[in-house]
Length: 220
Image 1 (tube, rainbow, N blue to C red):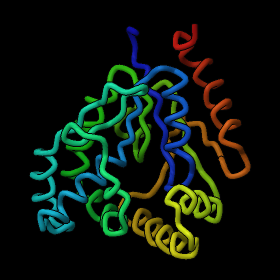
Image 2 (cartoon, one colour; image 1 turned 60 degrees about the vertical axis):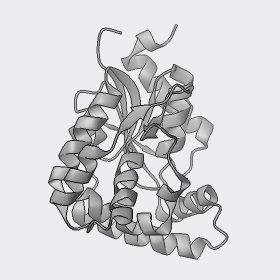
Image 3 (cartoon, rainbow, N blue to C red; image 1 turned 135 degrees about the vertical axis):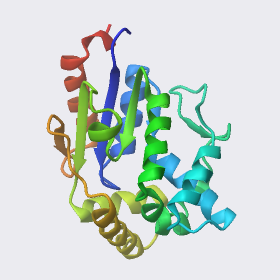
């Protein structure tokens, strides 16, 4: 592939980013880069090392020491220090602090470097600011939305939570933090998809049709 073939997927927690990104990566034979894993890994490392989530400089030092690579799987996915991401990355204590960690410009600058290195020259990359900052020249940019009740149901199912009200409150707090530190804004050329009333299969088919139009060489 001689040109950039990154597919950028942005959206809020529970909007279906990970499900869509993994499905696209599997279908197209591309690496799957979940940038949220990187922020969560840094957050967990900071908590374990006693680094204040509000100390951007110390977080940047810690980030510079973390090693992110792609696995040999199908599709290739992010590994942290040579291993698959720990289930601890989805813990409540990480969820409570990841937005604080992600708000620091020096942290985000280092993250962008790492994400670009993992995503080039071709990958399905999901997260926040992917289509606007990390890969502004990506030929395909998707921005996923869904109403909060739908996102809560998905998040509860994903985490195996028996009480959706707890998940809903955690998501409300996460949305509020994200709105303060890094508001969602789709790229001007992004295609906005409301996944609330669409099945996983419908969303994947729609996204792949867009890829076929813009990156036809990915299809035999």
